Length: 256
Image (cartoon, rainbow, N blue to C red; front, side, top):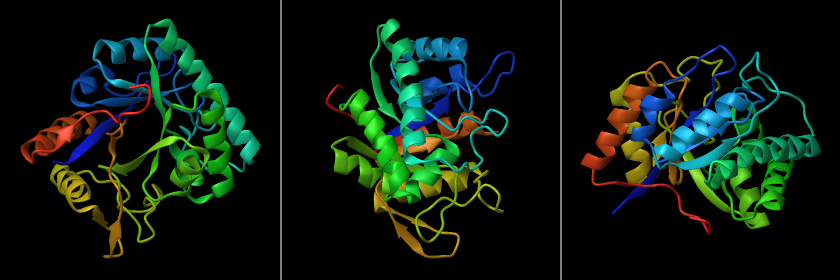
């Protein structure tokens, strides 16, 4: 039987601005990645989202990003490996405090946006991120793009890793995600998304925008919580996976 985790990026509201349908999506996923205040979120939102996640019994992860509220962490910044280390350590530590205070356990870390994509290709940034996580808590699971440098860095340092694939993004022939600045970067039709997800889980491959098959590993599937159809995608994808006899459960690590 196939098995996969279904994750979603949540806690991305800020101050008086509300983004996403956090409470509505939680029943359909098994893991959540909570923004830590740099690209989105704030202390009050982090606190509330942690409590919602615990109430719904889903695995909690930190979602550290670049310090870019205006750009939602999706604009590339020229940072060093040391800066990546410091940013990740700072943000993960903050969320871990909220999780511990609420009586929960932080299970994983998934970098956000541009930081995620930069570290997927830049081995030095990937190593800085992996080192920060390992030194904070070596039993945390590192989520990263399947086949990317960050997965390799996590494995080298001794972290448990989870290879991530995307339900609502298209792929390039090198296994990277299509840039959001290009046409057809996002999948907006739920049936197309379902077909891509089922293919990735059951065949270990996805069709790139160039028409070639990209081989990948699917430990966890991401649905973006800020997407216009996030709730619909979460519900439909979960149903399709269950209909296909795919077991949906959080990635297990040493502290699970």
